[in-house]
Amino acid sequence: MVRQGTGPVKLYGTCPRCGREIITGFGKETTASQILEAIRRHSAEHGYPPTIRDIQESLNISSTSTVVYHMRKLRDRGLIIMRPGHARTVRVVDICTCAAHNEDASS
Image (cartoon, rainbow, N blue to C red):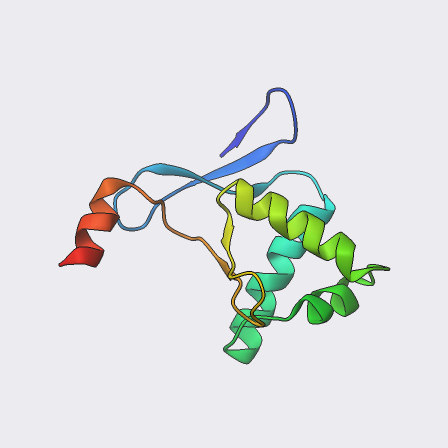
């Protein structure tokens, strides 16, 4: 589902665990949406997440700092999780972070 409004067009999907509506990406081809897709693609193809340099090279981005900037924006929007200072720790958030999931994790 696509919703229009102010700012970038967001794509919405449904959390496979609880059915809650979540943001799954962006509707237009932005650098952030390309990075999000590159992370998904690399993880699926190789079985582990990409490095910042992997993302930079696969998208022909001129600087790793540009990749880091957009990855931080994706993290702030809740679309990825990453552990700063550690390689290959980025992952796409495909489920929501509602209380139901927190209860599942603690049991």
